[in-house]
Image (cartoon, rainbow, N blue to C red; front, side):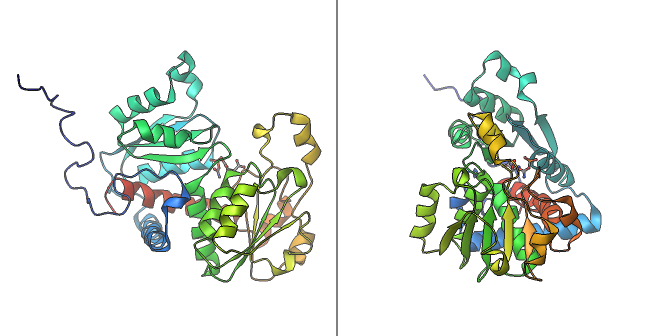
Length: 330
Ligand code: ASP
Ligand code: CP
């Protein structure tokens, strides 16, 4: 008996006509910043820059015409979800938006592997945000199509770290030699976990400013220490504001607290104000992955060093670059 090969599944779903198989990240998952080296980052930043120029010149174009992205979000999002949607649509593709899983069959008890297997039947790439650490790796284990981690609990947020690094690169013109001060919820903040790891590829100094309850996890500090990066922890910004080139502020991740009263205790424990900015260098930037709650006073927004709104725009170009790369078109 000859074995039966189903007509569709017998072909390689990763090799549609016209794709560039030698494109970096073609068909790959983006799960952790540990996947990148400096050469790959330079390549991504180069493509992101081209995306910026194309958007400025023509707005939208047909690089990913016919491709479909499934945007699967088990946690709230404004920027990541809408910038991936915008990125796909500006590249001529389309999006299946599952921004509220309570209206999907997840509510009926469908597992993450089955949900992902369903979506990949209809889409070419899956962007996943989920409250559990390791969820994207689990999804990627079951999916044949690329999975992009859009935040897995307190684990990682690799595309945010890429856009953060791109922001530093574009705004200050270099990364090597900088002092980066991370302030806020360093314990549960996945963006600082990813960014600090990514910065080990550069020659930077890292300062951590956090209340005792929200310190950078020891295992991440050990990873960074093993790469030889100088790092120091403080409970106040005062001693390091004057030497800081990048002040990266984060929100207290209240959704990760088992005891909500602890979150209340921390509310307002660190705030960037115009007085803070008066002590900072003339050439430095303030970043924040957003959403901001109370950590940066709105009066700081008019300071040209406040880069957080520009930062989220850089995210569009980085996500356009990533989609083009994983789909073999860059
Ligand atoms: N938006 C970022 C995240 O999803 C940061 C935050 O929510 O505070 O990790
Ligand atoms: N920075 C970020 O991930 O924002 P959202 O949570 O709004 O997606």
